[in-house]
Image (cartoon, rainbow, N blue to C red; front, side):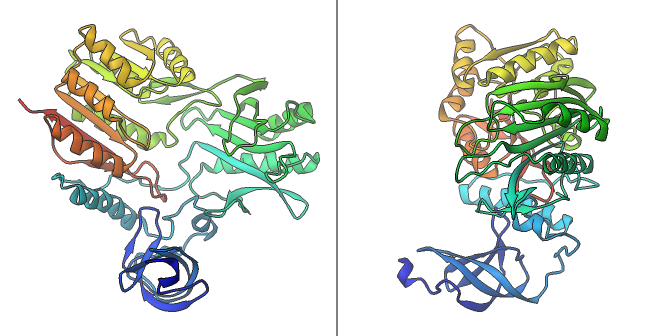
Length: 457
């Protein structure tokens, strides 16, 4: 079907029932077999849809009028958190969000013809205000510096003060920095002209330690009014222990540049996870929801049924969070990670915690695992916590060569999880027990889960 033959055109309006929710959290309506994805609409609702964009095989729409409301709709939110994509599921009551995440995995398994039970999603008691890190763009709107978030699928900034899913102390810190930028007339970055000084304000706060880091990301090498900004941030925010400048001179959507300048305090903040102390720098990857991360890693260790005698590989080790939290339950853990700074962080975190049975190596996981196999390393368990793109065929092949008894797969993307599970089943593994979704990112469409695979005898 070409765009010309689509049953709708831009600005058309019609009544429709919302029958499903996409993995991006948009309602689905249909005209015959033609799907229309409707922002801020949820299953069980009847709405007047206004068409905003038409493609050859689908269209996008908005809710012009809500005719019949779902019992699952949450009206106690600021719609800006939904329309910007900060919290695209916030319009759905929390129990329905948990069901949605379980159902996503179930439906993908069915499509892939993989048989597995999916347990009910483990949620949070307070599924808001949990994020320990914020990266907030700074732009000028009507002659005034604003901080906020981009409207979905655009680079139009919506000014926001309450981000709903972020630690409220972080929200307050962003406003302090925004007001100082206004007070001292610093210029905001202009994407179109690649001009201006301040691009982004990043704030990190330790959930347990309450140590706070402020990072001001600039296009320019120098930060104007540096000394007075530092003094006033310190006065206004007593939890701050680190103030940094990150320099990003490039015309890019990448938020952080390569160069960090310490303006005051320490280069890192510290926080605790499962009784261990972790150093966190401006560029460190550290889980943004430490409360649920503790549940996730405890669950992963329990499902591995560790006895203390095992040799374990952590194939995407990052700053060592999984490796170090399981180290006390195993004989030896080997971590491999492709990001040099993360490997340095992991080694430092091992030293901080006095952990001697964890070794971290820089490299591609699949290549390093083949080297280890050639050296005779035989892991009992392999932990996999890959990025959203999932595993490469080479990594699955490397795992097949090493033949661990168990694989513990921590996934942040159900689509790539199901694809990879199918491959593991083809290489002689079977899913052991139920797949366990964990709501690491409440109010968003991200689905985290833990799956255990066992080698067939």
